[in-house]
Structures are given as structure tokens and as C-alpha cells.
Image (cartoon, rainbow, N blue to C red; front, side, top):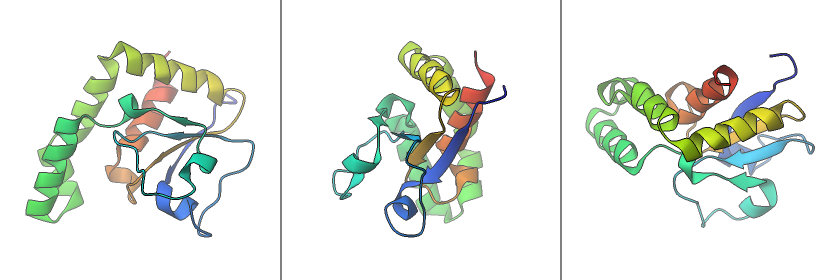
Length: 136
């Protein structure tokens, strides 16, 4: 796997002076819903891939549990988030095609996966990064 570079980042620090992505990187927004309210996003990203975001049902269930429990880890665990997201991606031919494309892209340049979550431990982009590295 030498030469394969996939990184993840929270979208909002990248849009400010708190974070930066090297100019030669390929930047991918992997959210289910496009944040039209975020100014400057179109200038930052190279591609938007909504099929790599968590399903609407998983998002809704996770947010409901997070609101009820006020604890990321508990909400993550109770919704079986990681297993469900992995299953979602590995059972969707379009998503798998995009995973394959990103893996190929990462052989030539750094690929950054962006979404809203601050804590990567409880974010689908960490799982997606693992899938890109593991599959194919």
C-alpha cells in the first residue's frame, strides 16, 4: 500500500485559518447533504460524493440518540453506526465504485475526505478512509 495517502478533516476548520490542505491534494466532500450555506466551499472541494455519506436513516437515528443521550460514544454504539455504515458502503455498487476511484486517486496525490464532524472517532469519514485502504 505504499504511496496511498488518504486523510480526513473536519470541514469547518479547513474553511478558516485553523486548518489547511496542500494545494496539490484532491479534496472530497463526503456528506449526505450538501451544505449550501457554507461560503467558499465550491472553491475548496474537487468533488462532492453524497453516496459516501451515511444513509438518511442512520443519520436520523444517530442524531436522535445523541440528542437523547448527550454522549457521542453511547449514541455511536447504540445505533451500531460503524457496522451499519460499513454494510451500507459495501452493499452499494455506486459507493464501491467511488471507493475504488478514490483509492486510485490516492496513489498519485493526497486525498482528503471532508465532513462536518469534529471528532473523527465518531465519524463516517474515518470508516471510509479504512474502507479505501482495505478494499481492492
